[in-house]
Image (cartoon, rainbow, N blue to C red; front, top):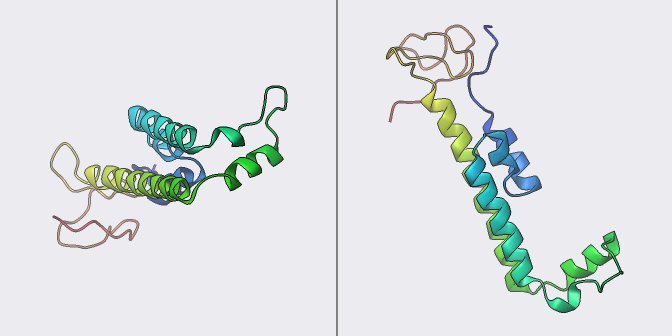
Length: 138
């Protein structure tokens, strides 16, 4: 139990968020935020995608159809989707980072390591058990 991580990993949350907006939030169990990012991304693409880029009935969705649709996006839509991905990634990272620092102080008021969960010496800037750097008090 000494090697147990008590918080979620911010870089993993950010990497998942880069794959598709909302995945990082699903990892963090932030259900409403994940649904919001999924919906916002879907709505942005649905609004920005020109009708001419959508395949006709029966044509189906193939890789070529998706590539043609992405090439048909106006520059403003591409920028909006890019900004959406960046904001989503930063949000997931900050939430994960916040959950680690929130867990660094236990309910009993003693400072705990966000990595191993063991009680730490308040005078040290690192955990004496696993050498993980401790967050500075704000």
